Amino acid sequence: MRRLLFLTVLSMGIAMFLASPVCAAVQGACSNCHTMHNSQNNNNMILNTAIDDSSGGTHGGGYPSLTRGSCVGCHTGTNTSTSTRPFVYDTNGVTYGTDTLAGGNFKWVVTEGSAKGHNVKGIPGMVADTALTSAPGNINADSCTNSCHETLFDPEIGGNKINTGCQGCHLAPEHHAPRQTAGTPALEANGYFRFLSGHFTGYGVEGIEDDDWQYITSESNHNEYLGKVASHTESAATGGFINVGGNTMTAYCTGCHGNFHIQHDAPANANWIRHPSDAVLPSTGEYAYYTTYDPNVPVARPDLTTIANTNLVANNSDMVMCLSCHRAHGSPYDDMLRWKYDGMIAGGGGDDGTGCFVCHTAKDH
Image 1: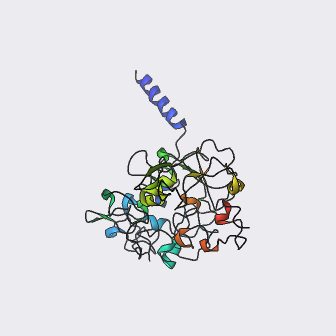
Image 2: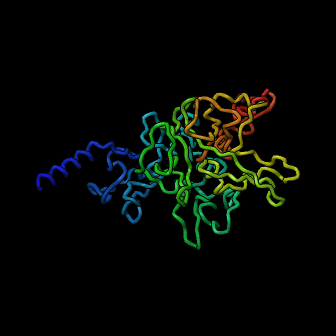
Image 3: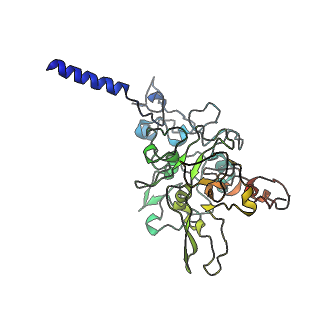
C-alpha cells in the first residue's frame, strides 16, 4: 500500500513538473518589483526616489502589494529598444515619435499645461486642470459625481478622497495575470488590454498588444484595437446619441467622455456636429484610399481573430475610433492630438498625407 501511495504521489509530481506553465504578464526576479520589509543596509528599497517618497513610501513602509514604488515611480524613465517596462513619464527630454510609446507621454502635460493630456495624480509637477472641473464631455449619472469619471487628479466620493491617478483608467493592474499568446487578443483572463479594466466583470478593453508598446512601429508592427459599430438613438432631446458597447477602446473612453459621442444636432437635421467614432470607414470616395495601415492614425477592427493583413486597412469594415486622433496619456499637441491640428491646411497647404489627410485623402491637394 505504501509503495502504491508513493508511486501515485511521484507520478502526480512528475505530471505537475512536466505540465506547461502559464507565463505571467510580468516575468523575472520578484525582487525587481517587490520588497518584504523595505529595508536593506539601512536603506529603503524604493526604486525611484526622485519620483516616490524618499522616506520609503507611505509611513516609511513601502507601497501596496509590497511593491518598491508607485505606478508613476516604476514607469518613469526613458524608453529604449531594450526597455523591459513601458515608461510613460520622462523627466528628461522627450522626442515625440522616437522615444514615446503608443499612449504618448505625460511630460508635455507637466511642462506645457493641461491641454496636452490627462492630468493624472501622482506625477511630480502635475496640477489639476485649471480650466475644467470635470472630464470634458462628461454626461455620467449623479452616482458618478466627484469620482474618477470626473477627474483623475483628486476625485472624491462622499467627501472621501480616492487614491486614483493611474488606476483611474488602469483600474486593477494584474501584472501577474497569464500572458496572452503573442499576436492574440488580451482578454479578461489576461487583465485586459494594457490592464484597462472596468469596475465589474466583463467590462474592459480587448486588443492585441504590441510587444514593445509601439516603441518601434510600422504598417505591420503595431497594436490592434477592437471596434464595434456604434448604434444611434435618435430623440429630440439628445439628437444622434451614439451608444458604443462591447469591449472596445471607444466604449472605455465614453465612461468619462460620453458627450463627445453625440454626433447629430437633431433627428430632423442629422447634421454632423462632432467627429464620428466607431464609425466604419467607407469604401468609396476619399476614404477608399486609406488602405495601408498608418500606426499614427490607427483604426479599430470589428474582429481581432480574423485580421487578414495587419498592414492593410479594410474599408467598409475597419473603423475610426478615439485613438485614431488622440494619444491616451499626452502629446506635444493641444487636446492630446496625434498631430498639430492647425497644421492641417486643405488644398496643399502643408503636411500632405499626414494626420487628418490620411483618411480625408482628397482634402490636401
